[in-house]
Image 1 (cartoon, rainbow, N blue to C red):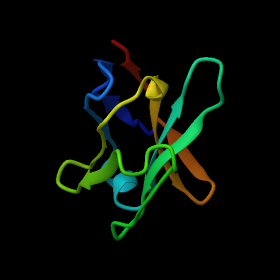
Image 2: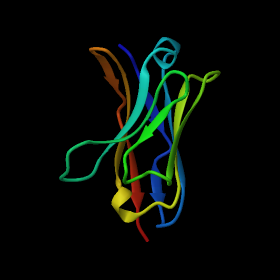
Image 3: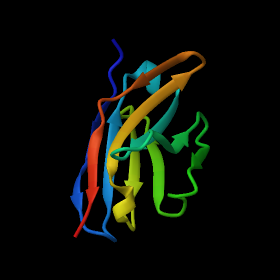
Length: 115
């Protein structure tokens, strides 16, 4: 059973920052596309950011310029640095790893942006 373990969620005021972490097995981190998704109450899960082998990244328009995805090869961990947070960023954030037909999800971590 592949485990992706997220951490770093919490409550933050608008304009604040949080950094999410997702620890993955080395075999997954080194060869899968690592992505972040989020799901707000009553809404479908949506793509947030992706990191490809070689370091290329991709972002949803709604977070471009505010969020940064990165990875630490030594720790087999992918991060999502979230700055200038808005109330509409409130959601459960999920780590995802995908390669071909193989796909794995983390358990999710709650991010709440509220004053």
